[in-house]
Length: 139
Image (cartoon, rainbow, N blue to C red; front, top):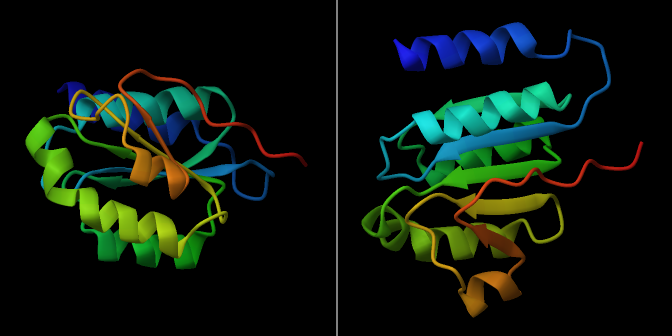
């Protein structure tokens, strides 16, 4: 019930087609099926005027790559709610970040996200266990 309500809020609050808005892709890490936190972030982004493409739970990094090629987002947010889900995708996220370096703001968040990871930070990944919106791109 909570999931369906969040999806409805995401859909109902999205900017209308044709209206300029920054775009974000929001996904859960490949082994992470806990959607509510990431969906809440997506709804908050919509409330701030962002267009959000929701990729869902357990999103394979190959699908995230494909969505980035298709959508050309301003920001990509990935949720990792457990230490295990983060650890399982860390190397893939590092490769993803290096491949897309500078193309968009990349944030990884959630309860499984470490406070610091120098290698990911050097690749441009912003890590945070707490919500903060991406920077709104200049018009």
